[in-house]
Length: 556
Ligand SMILES: [Zn+2]
Image 1: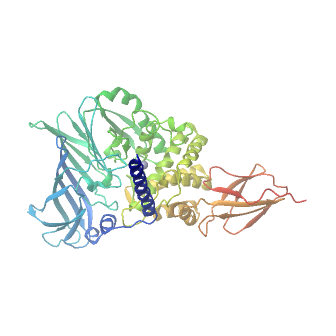
Image 2: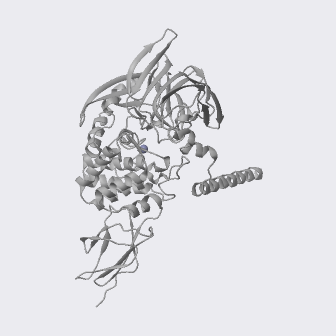
Image 3: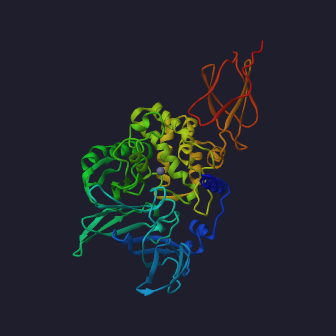
């Protein structure tokens, strides 16, 4: 008995130490050479600009293996002979050729350095064929834990999907695994056993049947695509489709679901058109008309794979049955359809240049849930949804991560980021102007990889406000800015505390139930009214706190 207790105590102590060291690491992370190779623009990456990928993979469910090749096309920016290609173990590169001739390569952890046969000239286009294979990492908790999911559908057919956000595309295929560079187009050819079918990004060019009991689907993406967006989804699928009459004309919408889910899906996926309608209103035209829009059923909750949004939310509203806002509005729509489709604008069209700036993906799209509710149920409903998500904020670490080492910031990039943007909408105080800023971002940075500063500066320019302290506060600091005030008779003394040093966010407040705009700063200011002040209330759509120094003091 005592032994068991000791064992338990020991286990508890080990767990405690692990938790404390994990928490310590989050506050003060230590990075390795591998993190730098993955997360920075190394000299072996900087000299070439991706133009094309043709990824071919044979997937064998019998032994969980992937075997194939990736033809990498690039334009030479400055001559260099050594190129970095990324592929994580246990996957291995077996051969690299240029113009049919074998090249020498060495491996350094997840990075492979290959020597070209001769020094290329600036402006040259170089093609390397990288052959690879292995049994890629299995995901234990997709999509949060990257890898391949090998599941079975209810009829016993294999049901397979990749999801690798964070861990990286190089988890299963060789590529330049950094978000700053995207190929201009990509072909994806996947071979699977009959009667399965693979669905990837873009449009289906050709579907070939072979005599050996396999079939190959060839997909083509005619726009730049981020690495983590590339995906393969294999199942006993049925297909149906329709057309959405959108801002840029007719958009082909295709739906791929397991055979026995077709009836449910035909009804439930009507939300796809609602999503496109709301987001074209707020963000502008869907960014990949040429590549179509797709919802593809997968054996995990879902992911924003470009032009093949993956879906596994059980054909139910909410997120796996939950309401992220606890207001009731979160059960009025399917979180995965809305959230992951929203990423076509922020994540796939406008992509972070470095993983540290992932708020560009998640803050705008967590905020887009509010905009979706706003579009269909009204402005106050959207605001209520957004305020409801504040319960999910932890203020543990800044939203912006650490540059150059593939390190994203706090999960607050979702709910806090959404509330930051909702607060900004209050400051702009002109809904049409705000909508034009959101649409403007999608024009200005269409199909680009961008840094946080570019987004911040664009919004500052469009609003005419110096928003640098605002963004520093919400993206680079963990404090909740606090409006400290005291009332003495007819006077309100106030300032911002718990904030960055030049924080100057204007604030809407209600004094004696009448609305006022104040411009607090960290230095104390005084507002004097004609009447005695009996109540002070901060507008609840601002993500900021209020702290009353004293009870209201009457002065005769
Ligand atoms: Zn997301």
